Image (cartoon, rainbow, N blue to C red):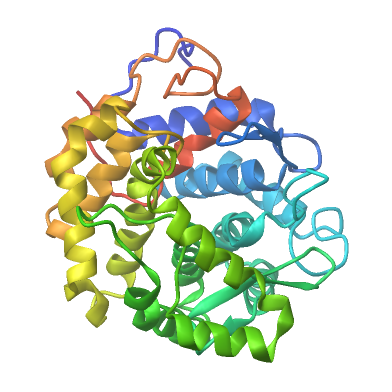
Length: 372
């Protein structure tokens, strides 16, 4: 096999195969991959997210090639994600190790293993993977009145709502991988989408605000009913404060593509839902189009997507209903076709190398695209 220093990658499928094969050397004996760090806050993680992302890569590499080496590695990662080590109380996944924060990493921490196990379970006909992904999804209470899911700690204790909008959307998108196996999951996702317009607030220019904000009266009713929802009152105050924060605007610009990428996946999998024709969605997509070059260049942005151009390509393809190949120039912007270090093809500065290497998983939910 050519070395990573002289391998010339010509398509996204070539990238996936290359990264999967070089990534095999990083897989540990127990099926896990080295943990990364949360790139927004540079916080240490457990191996769960990186292993889940690599599981998606290995599964897709097997689908592309039929190579049993990828199947064996993928199944080893599945087995790791089914162990008591990662779900020590048989509830949610232990995703991060920060003393002052939840260990489940909110909804977004659970989305990665749910999505990966559901995909691998489908491809490899692995019932335990599907059952576990479904069980973890079902652990999260969904509030019908507000249209939001609650976080659940690794010991099974509900922790009130995940106030970060992109976490709610990413969790819903991940759950759609279970749709072929559980009708009830898709029904819940559809109900979430039906409430989305009332929770997803925009600035005047179409920029998505970072926190979900349900209508005030139903929110106060839920707080009165369940005191552990009290942080939603704090959320209401923070929402108004952050509406005038320049620093928060920079963060929201960075996360525009994160929100819309997950929404575009939901649109692809739940295409007939009425939310896609709303003014809220059209205005947010319009903002992305208008700010596209600035977002890719990182102008006046903070955090958010590490692969803005790739996410924008997905978003435009799915919302404009054009083949992803129409946006191959955008995807090519992000990818280094002749990788010069490790397993990564993005060569991002200041990002943990293990996190960056597993980031190739972002290419696993699109058809093959030629690179330039």
